[in-house]
Amino acid sequence: MTLDESICQPQEMRLHLPYFTAGRVVEGFGRGSKQLGCPTANFPRSVVETLPKDFIPGVYYGWARVDKQPVYKMVMNIGWCPYYNNEQKSMETHILHEFEDDFYGSQLKICILGYLRPEKNFSSLDDLITEIKSDIKNAGEALDDDNCLQFKTHSFFNEC
Ligand code: ADP
Ligand code: MG
Image (cartoon, helix red, strand yellow):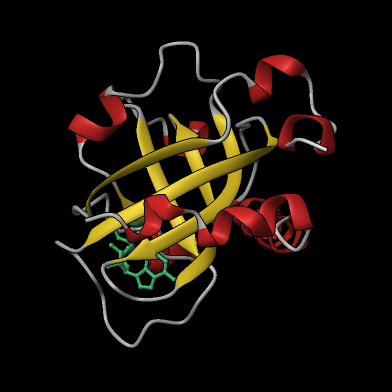
């Protein structure tokens, strides 16, 4: 079974998946960890701009590697974050691992495998936090599937 067949999602959501990209971690808006208890490593504009124009905004899951550290599960937001009225498109990756230190400036490689939900607005910060927790749980479970696990050891993560 191919990845496409294994994940029950509309075709347009899977259009560019699996999607591999990499770049240096830059400073974002400084609110991920502070307000939400969920740090998100931001890619620079140069990486965001290479996304295909018809890549659907939303919350995705996949694998991530920071420098030479192990490959970990990740959940990421691609888009404008309606709750915060962002004007610029961003790609923000939350890695499902507790790091001892921040890793600004490190090389972050990601492989996006599946789509979880569209971006949406929330009436309160509590609602947003509840949704993020459920995204993390759903991403963690989806990635345990064999069709996703095979990408954890993809040669992309070992190339320099
Ligand atoms: P910023 O607005 O600068 O992106 P955040 O509050 O979103 O700030 O925190 C993101 C930073 O936290 C990342 O750039 C990274 O250095 C660090 N970090 C620590 N743990 C994680 C993690 N599990 N996932 C993503 N980033 C993490
Ligand atoms: Mg961030």
